[in-house]
Length: 71
Image (cartoon, rainbow, N blue to C red; front, side, top):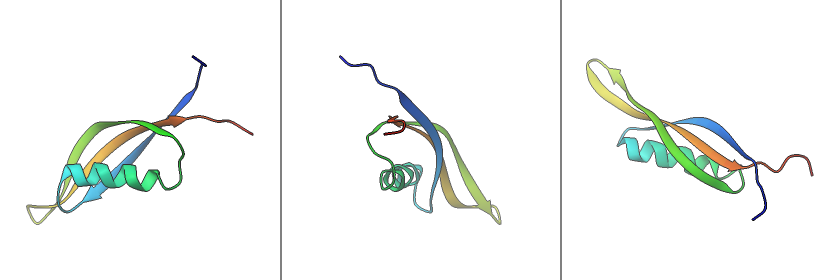
């Protein structure tokens, strides 16, 4: 098996519906500009509050992808 190097970045996704949609949206958006996504790990969940009510769900997601370096 060939050795590989992976880069990890952190994203924050938001949704008015759920944490799952927030995380999914972050990964789907990242996949539009990053190649070969490998692993996504939810590192933190929180909510945006407005007037004492939940206005949005936020998911902090760590995403890894294969690092290709300069070609």
